[in-house]
Amino acid sequence: MHTSPHSQLALHDVSKTYDERRVIDRVSLTVKPGEKVGVVGDNGSGKSTLLRLLAGHEHPDDGEVTVRAPGGIGHLAQALDLPPEATVRDAVDVALADLRTLESAMHALEDALTREPPERFASSSVAATYATLTARYEARGGYEADVRVGIALHGLGLPDLDPARPTDRRRPAPVIRRRGTRTASAGSPRRGASRAVRCSSCSSRTSRSSADRDR
Image (tube, rainbow, N blue to C red; front, side, top):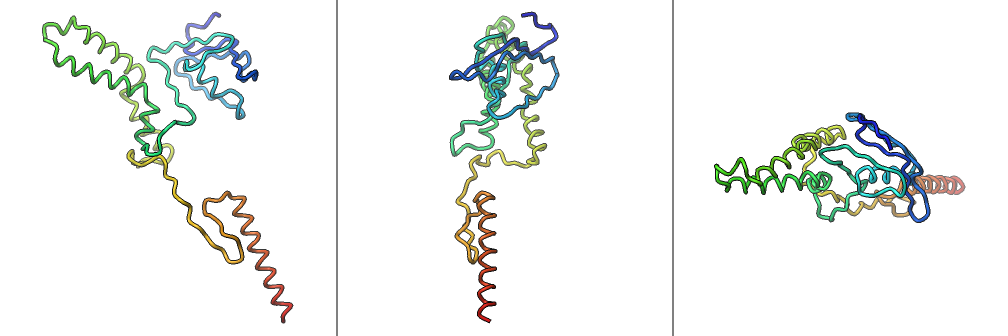
């Protein structure tokens, strides 16, 4: 495969099969640095598989995937596996797990560096490792990550979202009783709600018709 030196991500004749079902069939793609690309397709058409291949979480059955990203590849899954007590902050930390891991390692090295004698600092392996991790963290945009999270929340109309808020906000739906209808729940699907309204209208019309006959 001859990949352009200007491409950052590249796939060449990539295929992937699950249980004898081929979800990606000889796909070729190149993405240049700074280029924004959206993947559009029906459910089950292979969008998530394509992203997992680019992130290195899976390997193609055929073809070749080339990634040039000194800081690594970030991948946010469609659904996060969070415990019921998880907060918004926990969800963000899971989404930025690789950066949080780097931060923890950098903090540990910072503590170790404070114990290094000044005369050994320049040749210290701890200092060299710290410099490597810092460069990787910067390449991944680690110093701007939390700012980007705030910008994303603002774009979603949630600028004041409390990081300590639980992600699981489900509560029992209040029960609404309508005259002439069965018990309906406020959390019921719209189709069920519209059916209840139609039944209520039918019941009202029937009552009026009976009253007219009594007259």
